[in-house]
Amino acid sequence: MKLDQKNVVLVGASSGIGAALAKVLAGKGCSLALIARREPQLIALADDINHNAGKTLARAYRGDVTQYETIEPLFDQIARDLGGIDVLIYASGVMPSVKRDEYCFEKDRAMIEVNVLGAMAWINVAAKRFETARSGVIAGISSIAGDRGRASMPGYITSKAALDAYLESIRNRISRYGVQVTTIKPGYVDTDLLAGAKTPIKAISPDQAAREIVSAIEDGAQVRYVPGFWRWIGMAVKCAPSFIMQRVNF
Ligand SMILES: NC(=O)c1ccc[n+]([C@@H]2O[C@H](COP(=O)([O-])OP(=O)(O)OC[C@H]3O[C@@H](n4cnc5c(N)ncnc54)[C@H](OP(=O)(O)O)[C@@H]3O)[C@@H](O)[C@H]2O)c1
Image (spheres, rainbow, N blue to C red):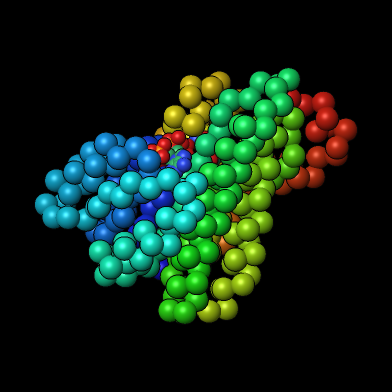
């Protein structure tokens, strides 16, 4: 599906990949609903997009994905404001730093609440409406982290593995109705989430990630690694024997 002039809901649009996606999609003339908790950042982004476009393309909506009961009414309000919704992109995510010897339930819970339950809450609402309409696109920003249990950040890795499985299940449920579900698996992207962490492979810019994500959606991809070489790394990590996974620290 070409995304030009589509009505797009972007959850997690206040910074990083989500904010970069908003700019790329605005360049395609999309009408955008930008959602996150930090309203000033959303309003500044919407103002910037609308100023450059010379018309209102972007609207800001303050929303916390962990306030699950607010999501369905917000989805319906956005549908009324935009005159329908064609695409939902779920980019919200948190990754608090976790030390190698730290076991913190509060951090694990925060990651599950935002990265998994928030995604399920938004995607359920969209899937129900898109199935009825027999059209629509759902894209979830997962991660290479979901490919294999690893010693670093068990909670984050679990959250992304769960998101992968959820997106695949929804795809298997509603692709038969003409609804596209795309799982995006970025490698390292230079955003606040990484907070300047040293990465073994150079992080790409949020702009590059956004362009590749938009291409993946337009290509009708089911699963797309961003950039593409991460697919081969993911395959190697999935095949690695456990005794190796128990010795590495990444
Ligand atoms: N950066 C990477 O290397 C990388 C790699 C693989 C996957 N990813 C994934 O890419 C996605 C975007 O992350 P990013 O790298 O762009 O980091 P980011 O700049 O920190 O963006 C995270 C976004 O999530 C939103 N968010 C967090 N908690 C929320 C909540 N309770 N309710 C609503 N929105 C919430 C934030 O908005 P507010 O704080 O304003 O609410 C922000 O817009 C995440 O799912 C992340 O796991 C990132």
